[in-house]
Amino acid sequence: MIHFDNVTKVYPSQNRPALQHVNVAIEKGEFLFLVGPSGSGKSTFLRLVLKEERPSQGHVHVAGKDLSRLSNWKVPHLRRRIGCVFQDFRLLPNKNVFENVAFALEVIGKPRRFIGKVVPEVIDLVGLEGKAHRMPDELSGGEQQRVAIARAFVNRPMILLADEPTGNIDPATSIGIMKVLDRINRTGTTVVMATHDAAIVDAFRKRVVELEDGRVVRDQSRGVYGQAY
Amino acid sequence: MRAQFVLQEIWIGLRRNMTMTISLVITVAIAMALFGTGLLLRKQVDESKSYWYDKIEVSIFLCAKTSSNDSCQKRDVTPEERDALKTQLEKMPQVSSVQYENKQQAYARFKDRFASSPGFVQSTREGDIPDSFRVKLKKPEEYKAVAQAMLGQKGVDTVINEQEILKKFFRILNGLQFAALLIALIQVVAAVLLVGNTVRLSAFNRRRETGIMRLVGASNTYIQMPFILEGAIAGLLGGLIASVLLVFSKMFLVDRLANDLQIVSKLGWSIVILVIILSICFGVLLCALSSFLTLRRYLRI
Image 1 (spheres, one colour):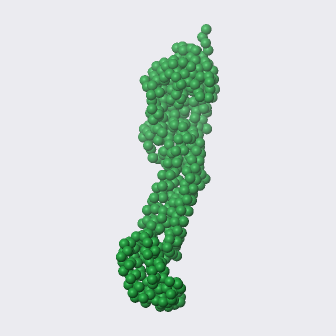
Image 2 (cartoon, one colour):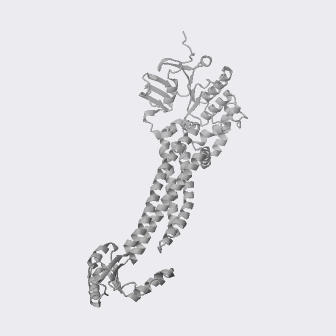
Image 3 (spheres, each protein chain N blue to C red):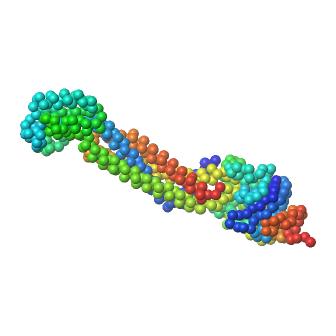
């Protein structure tokens, strides 16, 4: 589903590469934790999958397509098949829960009847039954993140990228968020989650890829956060 | 593309940028009004030219006792001199027709032409206007050749080219037209810069929305459309205000000028409507295009 083939990324203003010779293959339906300290290249990894950045060297393949050969006007179609969740939720404060989720479908031109059917289903899936008409500032952090996940998943993407989704949320609430991501993973969606949260990684026992200074230092199935000695 | 969604986004954008939008509308309105006025004046000049050039004549006044010209030696032109001049004129290749007008005819025509100013007519007596040849030229520009051939001939007092009188009027109109178009050009530059600023503000105000749109895979057209339409709507509003201003400028500038200078040909309203349509289209295109171009700088795709 996602293949990194000897990828190096150097940002123009920095001499130290953000990623160096990264080779990772993520298969369809996998759940993968991307761990490592701040600045180790986790976000760059995710941005390369979205084609927000181009690799300086090597190739990124997503869903069998080489992204360096994907023309710019096709990039929106790539992004429609990838959902994204961030630490800061990125909800629109002037829209309620339903409208925030519906926004993702409106802007890709889906018909209103379809939106009216699909959005409530996804809101239920992430565990926000009955809260469709709340505004974001009336929700807790965990609930806001559920809205963001609903928005990322509403178009049924093949891949869900989550950049520290529990970074702003207390541990108890984080478990709930992880359950939602796990539920989404069980529908066959590939989930890649970048995180600092050792407790979560240890509790879930999924594949772990650890980055340090832009290099893959560990790739372990059913891994834990820290090095297992 | 869902129209309701796009319209809603445009409305939000315009409302958030209200003061910017107002200044943009005013600038576009003035620019387009001046542009249109320039076009109307141009049209007026063209129409007056073709109207007058058909009627334009070179008058060759013949010697009379009252003439102050030394070459006339204080005596009337003799019939022989007159006939010689006439044959010479008729032979010239530039001349299309020659008509002789004696004092009585000239006075009658004068009375007729200035019937609206009786004082002027009363102070003039029959005989004040000398005999003349009224010469029509094939091309009005070829006046010089005729004038040079005639001046200094026996019996010729003065040669007057009516074109010279009209030139003054055309100079005024051309000057006005130039001024209008120049100010319009400056305003157009201001409008383009204002569109740039408005789009930048608008893109900044809506960076959350556009960021999410990009992320969920909205197409570039979908992301850009509200901004471009925002510009186009501001251009349209400006154009509509400009069309009102253009109606005023037709009534109070172009028509009044034509009246004051006794120009018979007035511009029709159909021309004004054409100019209005042209100005509105130009305004809309100008704003839409400049917002499209500035978007490329301020909106990451």
